[in-house]
Image (cartoon, rainbow, N blue to C red):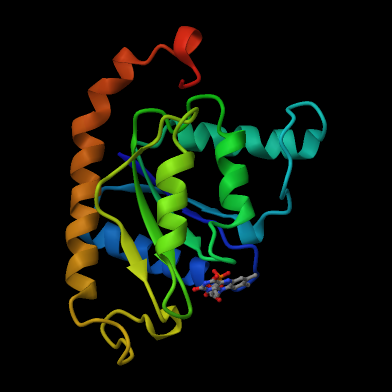
Length: 197
Ligand SMILES: Cc1cc2nc3c(=O)[nH]c(=O)nc-3n(C[C@H](O)[C@H](O)[C@H](O)COP(=O)(O)O)c2cc1C
């Protein structure tokens, strides 16, 4: 089984990348035979494009990514809060995933903030990202506030003591959803019903 872990910061050396790496280590500890696809938008240079035919470098790059996503059974999506919103690249991602890459597969939202934020990206993604991608956000989410203090095993004082157990539980859930939802792929009819209402 393959899980894609996606970091949607616009910044180099971002907290989202750091958190993404920690989640990768953790999920592999919990399920040793997992394949991982790592997508970190701060390392990519194709922000804000959409049309298939405008930029062939982007197109080629995206086709490879798209294949990796298509063959993934679940997604961890790390999104920082910028201006009380999900990041522009996070929203852009859902526009370019238009070939059923995420369809009817479980996704876990991991929202991060350097302060007390982090709720807005969750509510934004839950309300607006699924219509055409058909991603299925699982009912659990993780919000990491004071993210600079997040360091499993030696968290700073502002990270709740229960955080690591909550992450462990939520990743187990994601894996279980990914396994249970595999048969859904047989029902997907993107030819007639590619976009939601
Ligand atoms: C442009 C910008 C806007 C931000 N706006 C918010 C905000 O509205 N709420 C919040 O809690 N944090 C905000 N932050 C702080 C980020 O959540 C924090 O710096 C986070 O670690 C950034 O993640 P990144 O390093 O993965 O990009 C903002 C940061 C940036 C760069």
